[in-house]
Length: 311
Ligand code: ACO
Image 1 (tube, helix red, strand yellow):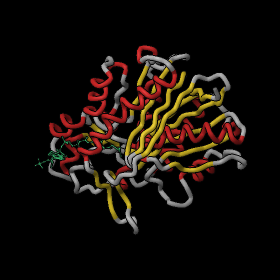
Image 2 (cartoon, helix red, strand yellow):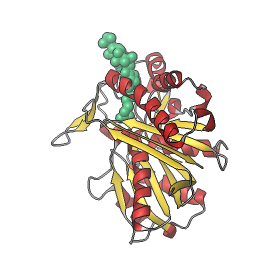
Image 3 (spheres, helix red, strand yellow):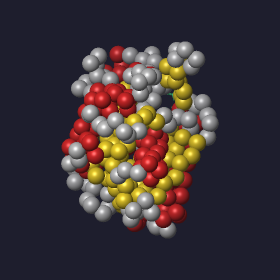
Image 4 (cartoon, protein in one colour):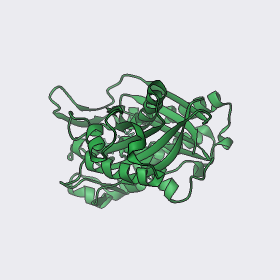
């Protein structure tokens, strides 16, 4: 099977971190409420000189460095984001220029909310197979703070800004499985006809969706590969809420330690959360060559996606 192998990762966060107490300057909330309902303790928000673009570029530079790959070897660039600085040009076009990538490659943004990074990875694989080429740079980058209503306590405490990037190579014998899906639904929305509506969310219906999407994706991937969860070293889910991950662990009946968690430090960074987690895992020495990982994204749309691969 034509699968992808992970060659390198990188991440970038804004300089300014806000703990839960800092959120009380915006809304009537408390560290106790946020911690017990979500597991979140801290998030990063962009300052004026930081944007989805600057974070995406910094994360991509680190991923290329970590992969030890010349930027000229990149055959395909995808940026998963719902918070691009401009509608046009795409964030991918600006990253392409900053990194001086080759002109004869596709570069575009992918919009699938928090499932976006894995949608982008799968799109990159399809593009490499269809067009030829070996290396893909895939980035998840978000300035979620630009989409928030800072007077809405139902949403503003949940999200953070950041970017993660990964370099992949297409290999004929690489083990790889993927699933994805969509159920048109407005449970989380932002924008509107004049882009006038900030983020709004029906938290409880998103919660119910998420706790069924994660186990479903994991089981579908294992079923396709004929494997059991014991054969997998890490499950890296989209980092939205500690209770969502805990409920998924219970449904699957697996050890909680298999699920990587860092949402306490970053909150929900949407499309950036999975590549940020991958980069942390790699940095901590948790991703040895040959390990098998499952990644699962879910989010607005509603969208979901899962990929199983060896690193
Ligand atoms: N601080 C204090 N109180 C709050 C806050 C806050 N930040 N936010 C809500 N409350 C209050 C509510 O007003 C409500 O008060 P009331 O009972 O007087 O009306 C009370 O807390 C309970 O509210 P619920 O909505 O029932 O709280 P719940 O336990 O469901 O937790 C939460 C809310 C955390 C949003 C949860 O539903 C959740 O995590 N849902 C999933 C959301 C998610 O993960 N979204 C992102 C995924 S997709 C994507 O990433 C785009």
